[in-house]
Image 1: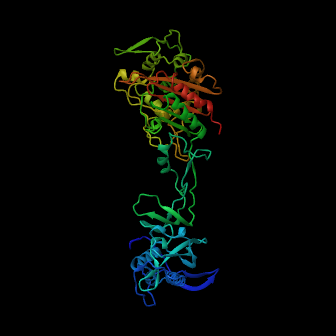
Image 2: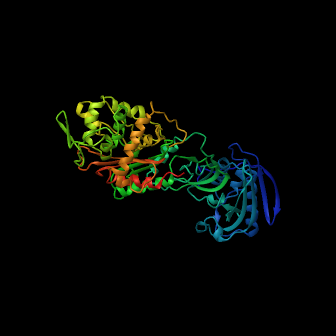
Image 3: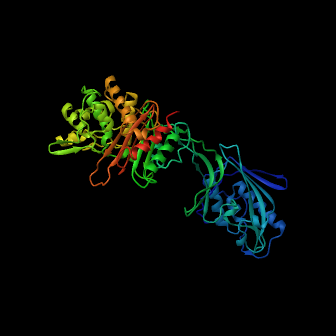
Length: 560
């Protein structure tokens, strides 16, 4: 150990006593203010180490003198009783300054075994190992740090005995290239995040990239209190610090319960993984509690990638028809109103068609919704709605496009922009054009229909939830629920929703994307106080991939 060793001590000798064969020396409540400590005695002449061993009495006497000087705080005298005075004095001073004990008791023992010696392989010939006990006390702690040490006693050319100096004289674990000091100990589990039931969240792949962001935004006052301890560190920085004694115990921080439900999160992770062939494709799923807006599950594929569920900005396809239908209902169109479903409908020379070429001249609005007829929605929407009404409905009733939701996580806000042309206006009615949504947005849409009132989604309880400008009228709400229920029981979502009972409703979606060979699959639905939305890139029709994924989570239920 060189003179720059990061170690230290504070000392005043309070006496000597004999305990069970040990000579004990105690120092208490005195700091040396960074000085080395001056000897009141003449310094012995330093000789070189010789191969001949000192006598047992010489070794005992020199060890006793060394420990007495160290305990007294006379570090120059202690250093002079070693075979490397300058290094020993500097190292003892560093121990005093960096560890700062309030009291130190050193008790000389008997012969130590070779195995207990500091560095037996490097020990000089003729060295006699003597054991000693160290008891170190600290302000603020009632538990002392006690350990067994070893002094290697050697004979010098001047005939005297001395301590063979190595860093292990300070502590057996303090080897060359290491430093000892008092450092803060982190509060284990500080500000730990759990699910809404207090269960840990470490086993959910989709949440791992998000926990750091959430941890930075949890309410104040939750961090734990760090402790303090004696720590040995590797001067090279290659190895982790080694705690050798705890002075004050760290106190764990108060756990913060997020809105996530572990059971639903597990189901969501599995559903997304299965929908993408093991997570190789892109997909996302969000579950929301309609009565509160609390986000109960967030799943992404790939799990280690972008939080697509919140940051995605994609055309929602026919799931947008929930909002379009709300606008038409607000405009006075009844679910029983005649609304023929044509195979094709042209707007400014652009021909819109239905995904499955369905058609029916005698269809009503409710059947158009349940079978997701594009042409009926476009024809009726172009007739009954003004250019701004779709955007206004999304904003006023569903909270979309009126500022950024403050959920606790970064979010790409959904957008229903003013259409740039008549053709784009027609495309927006069926969730195409420049409209962008994500799984969180569409889960919230279904949740709003189920509950009747928009609750801005949140992941951290207590976050402010800005209300929507207006509530859906009772007639509009009744119509939406009727049509979403029909879709879930006898429409495009019936197969996916099979076996799910209670108050249920759903809407499938298929979104075309330029340059993509397969359409994106969308699905949004609710069952009692649980709303789920899922999207799978290139998954095809909403009933094929996104629907089964969402339904798996709905079947788990929200039974907190």
